[in-house]
Length: 428
Length: 195
Image 1 (cartoon, helix red, strand yellow):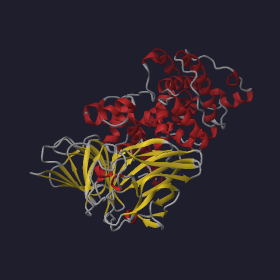
Image 2 (spheres, helix red, strand yellow; image 1 turned 90 degrees about the vertical axis):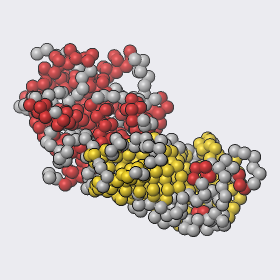
Image 3 (spheres, helix red, strand yellow; image 1 turned 90 degrees about the horizontal axis):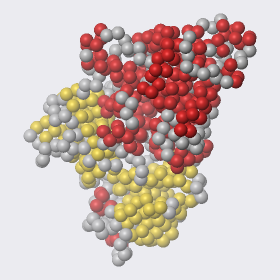
Image 4 (spheres, chains in turn red, brown; image 1 turned 180 degrees about the horizontal axis):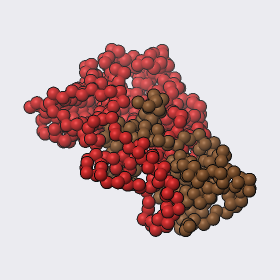
């Protein structure tokens, strides 16, 4: 373990570093990995930290696994400690190893016994590690900040509660119900009986689950859902409506009206650290700057083509970004210092009677078609924002975005629209 | 004593007699304990050079054997980590020349990290190990399943992703997140001191 706590790099680099640690970097990824290391020498610390932790986990996890086996089988306690060398041994070198080990195992064993004794002290949790807590109707759980707990529902579905989580479980003729009052949990839900979906009530949103895997968290006045498998219906509690959130998508809802957002990520899921430092936010179609949700949006700029459309009917009461937008076939060429940015395009369906399939458009980022056949009405209906986030490399001083209609444009009803652009610096 | 490790060439074998005299006062056990204390760093260092955990184990074993057999070569008070890395680096070069040529991988562009970065690493002492074990215990069960699959059963990330029905990229991000949690948890526990 490294003694110092470093900030996490962006998700793309985290993946590259994990692939490096797994020994599976391919040619172009290797080049990209090297380029990032050259650009940011501090990333070396992050990567060597991963390798050291990987080595530590290779040593520690087999010891923990052994301890778990001994906990499950009390008779195993009587067996002598298995003085397994800290390194796994490939079979092809086994004979050579036996000789080699003989040369140094004596003094090493004494030290290792000491290490195992020190490591092997019992966990603070009284229950057997690895055994989820079976809940019955009426169970309420509240975890400490640094606790974690796995829970098994009566149907075998599993909930992994994270530190600080608080939940209540009930079951009746309508199905299972979970009230997530605080904290976060990762859920792996078995297929539910027809007409009796699992319902999760979070402070700012309700979830209806048929059978899927996801993470739901409530923090800082927001409920956030990230779906990894299947789909979940997510409905705001502040009257903004709801939508289906599919695998690879996320949704957030706040307590205030007009705070429902569905998000799509180009490439990777939105797990992990925030997407970087805010560089620029633009309120498309607005002639003045506005503040929304803690972000200062500048008046519309750096565009070419399209036109401003005021969204009188579609404006959401507490969201100034929905007062107007840029509409038509248009382009943004935003000057930026070279670097890697997370670019979020915030879309809003302005039609008061939206019809899926009518407004279908695509967006090119840096000359590549990154978002294809976007249909806001189909994704979120009218009201919620649809956020699209891409991690973009700017190498020639300009971020280039172009919006195109998929169908021949006959009216504004079918035109591409965009409400705002938010740019965060991931890596210089 | 039988050893399968060939003598390493050059500078490591030609220590000055002063250094050897000083080293002779150092017990072999002390060098072995130093080796244990730097094991994770050394393992990570070797992997960074050859990018293969199985070969890393080979090299590390042989580096350990060499160090145990040549403990007198280490000058007490000098930088053990740097010495051990020098031993490991030479062995890595041998392995790379022999094994990677067979696997037609010698055109792989190697990535070397600066020595100064390795020197900053703090290896696992008993206190850190204890903290890490506690922190792993506190992880959600799904995270523990990932760790056990990977580090106890030696399964590939691809097969773990398949079993958990996750995209591989998502699994990598999840792992990155687990490491982050473990690192923060260990640092917090150590900062708080013994319970």
